[in-house]
Amino acid sequence: MDRYQKFATSGLGRRLVRKLGLPDPYPLRRDAALATPVLVGGATRLPFLEQLLTGPAPYGALVFDASGIDSVSDLRQLHDFFHPAITQLGPCGRVVVIGRSPDSVAQRALEGFMRSVGKELRRGGTANLVYVADGAEDGVESTLRFLLSGRSAYVSGQVIRVSGTGPAGTLEGKVALVTGASRGIGEAIATVLARDGAHVVCLDVPAAGEDLSKVANAVGGSAVQLDITGDPARLTSHLRERHGGVDVVVHNAGITRDKTLARMDSGKWDAVLEVNLACQERVNAALLDGDVLRPGGRIVGVSSIAGIAGNYGQTNYATSKAGVIGMVRTLAPVLAERGGTINAVAPGFIETKMTAAVPFVTREAGRRMNSLSQGGLPSDVAETVAWFASPGSGGVNGNVVRVCGQMMLGA
Ligand code: NAD
Image (cartoon, rainbow, N blue to C red; front, side, top):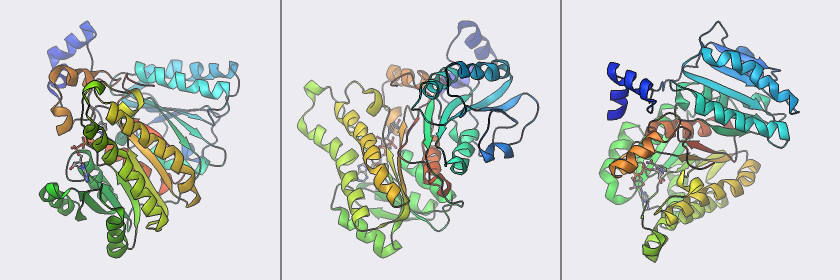
């Protein structure tokens, strides 16, 4: 908990927060249990929704299947279902709207509804929209489990597309590569993927070797000291020779070299574009060309809110992170042909050493300018990566999901 959050959750703090309408950073639930009971509405076509535990209010979650909505007048169903129920949603409640496809007037309208609900929810509540393509009804379970659990604590206001199905099971017996794994978000990703059963190959620059070994030991994985900007053949041979290939690749390593464009030398531009984007393209090509990424393999990129909204002093960084989104879009069909997926997370303000170094006022603004009025944790990003990587998410391809507490910046 940050200092303001501690104050806001104390007796006097709570009274002041309410009276003055100050940001209210409710302590988030981050466990794996599903938010229950669930009130389900709409003409449901998803078998998974029938398995959910229903019961009387207060509700843990409100799930509305809006797949049948295909005219503007049908949208009234949203009001009719949510209006009486929304005040009966418990703390850290979940709102999930299910659609069919954003390619019609009424279905596209669901986004505006969901995003506004997300901004109105209090006490750590989140709202998200899942478009489930025809034929992908059985592929939605991993996504709904994620969204209905505490693992999606900092994911709100997001639109997710599920376009196929995936096998059941865990990451047991799978090999996952995480770059930039010696600290911060990378360390959290390695920890969560190992928890889910993967053998994690933790990669970082030689200068971070000591911390890297600690992380690799802690997660029962292995450490590779390598600068990711080098020849990708070194990495692919390592993965092939030591592990027989790789199942999950998380491009987490990233750097910033901030300056306004007028003051940015070409070295700062090149360094950021190289680490955050160019080398990832080369690694992907080497993994795919050499079939080192096994069939059904997953690639996960780490973009940033800056890549969506842009940011002062970060032309180089935002360019690279928007490029990561382009990488997801262009490679999604290629991965789909191999039974795999590529997706990206776009973190907002995450509490790491990097953001602790940001000046106080900017840091406070970053923390509070979102629907949850607080920063996210590295584990929030890691859980989102783990959902993309899980075998059951085989139908989740080509998505960019912000882990930003529904930050006010960007679309
Ligand atoms: P961090 O600086 O703590 O960690 C980055 C890691 O990448 C470091 O361990 C570093 O040694 C490693 N790395 C850098 N260059 C490398 C190279 N050439 N080869 C191998 N490893 C290299 O950063 P973090 O806050 O944990 O961020 C992780 C990722 O999340 C980055 O891609 C970052 O851009 C992104 N991100 C972070 C935030 C945030 O709020 N912290 C927000 C948005 C996006």
